[in-house]
Image 1 (tube, one colour):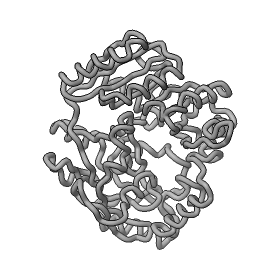
Image 2 (cartoon, rainbow, N blue to C red):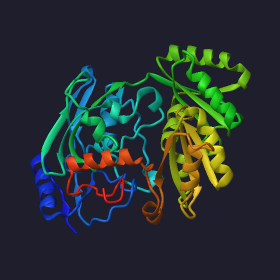
Image 3 (cartoon, one colour):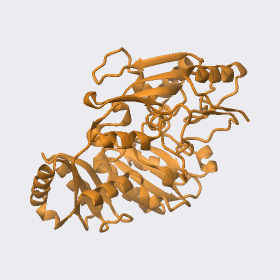
Length: 400
């Protein structure tokens, strides 16, 4: 087993070139918190990026930060917090969910997996805040894309290609992201005792108001709030948040009395939602993350729960369904994907297996199977960046 631990860009390029020359694939690891995502790798060789760490440039007034890809998120977020700023895509912490222990989530790993939390429907995904990078391709070549300013036009947007590639196209060495002001205060309005269909309708109606809601979730059970609650988050200056909360409660008074959570309780709740906290201790269950049209979230959840032993909750106004399924057979993969398509077979969406045993992750498609034309395109893209399949091979699709 070989472990490459580069400290510079040139050492990183040499490590990839050595793996290419030997045609021996490597697993790319930074903090190690996301090794349980995707299909399991079988290569004994590791490319450890942990020494490529540290903030390289930060201009609070320009809302831009550049850092080594393996810089821990905790370090990034602490620095931003000191300056009243944040990563608006709200990167979730899945260490407890994935059993990653003390591993450290990194900025580059978060971008490579395109992870975003409850603010996703308002602020966008990680890729929407990814401005530029420097990397080494599977050809052993250094290349860069994007820039270090918020407004930048450089041709094809390779940042969006890298985001969600799970390290299968290139090894990120440096990344630049957009940052935004941190809200002065946060409040959450809770409407309890709602049936799933009523909850989805309430979230849709609330998101259509001018109250600027930045989080909308339905929590049947498992969180530190009354069961069957719709949680609606409001952020901003304290007077504005208070006025918008009052307006929201008045507008939806017919849905029942609302409870208001203050700043600390709200922040804790939304961290727990992003982390899928109730599922962290249910280690015997497979965890799925299903993205669909918001109007269908509850419908699919009830369909799956009717066929399987499943716990669930909704985020993103109903557009993100989290499922914890008893791990038997394919852990509900067939039923979940059939529910997405619906009775008429025309429904759209995708299901991703976030947590499962090694056997399950090898046996079922972890990511939504692609149509033939899209799969062929993805294959050609991989050919362009990593023709010898040495970077995280098989992480997304077997053999690719």
